[in-house]
Length: 159
Figure 1 (cartoon, helix red, strand yellow):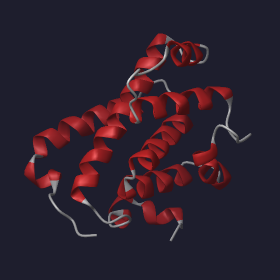
Figure 2 (figure 1 turned 90 degrees about the vertical axis):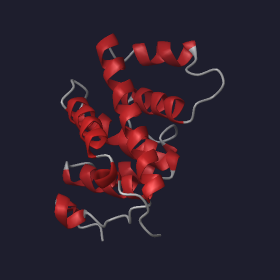
Figure 3 (figure 1 turned 30 degrees about the horizontal axis):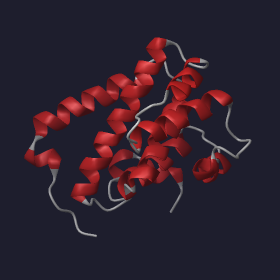
Figure 4 (figure 1 turned 30 degrees about the vertical axis):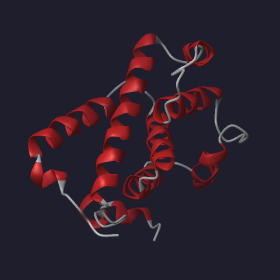
C-alpha cells in the first residue's frame, strides 16, 4: 500500500475544520467507551485499515478490554456489550452502511431507549465524523501504524 494524496498538506484548512469537529465530538457527553466502539466499528465496516489500527490502539490505551475489541464484529451475539452500547453500534451500522430505508423507526425508537435527543445528535456526529475520516484515509492509503510514534500509539503494545 502506498500513500496517495496527503489531505493534511493539500487542504489543511479543511482538515483543521474536520479535526475541530472531531475534537468537539470527543468533548461531548457521550461515554468515551461508546465513542471508541463507534470509531472502531465504522472503520471495520468501511475497511479503513489506518483508522481501524489507530482506534483499536487508542481504545486499548484508554483501558478497553481486548476481548471486547475482538468481539466487535459479533457484537449482537456477544455478552460483552451493554444494551446501550448495542444501541450505539446498531445506529453506527445503519449510518455507515446506508440502506434505501435509512434509519428505521424501530431502530430510532430503540436508540431513544438509551440516549437523550442531545446524545443521539452527539452520537450521529461521532458516526458521521469517523465516516468522513475513513473515506479520506481510504483514498490516501496511509500505512496502518505509520503514525504510531508521533501519536503515542506505540504505547499500546499491539505490535
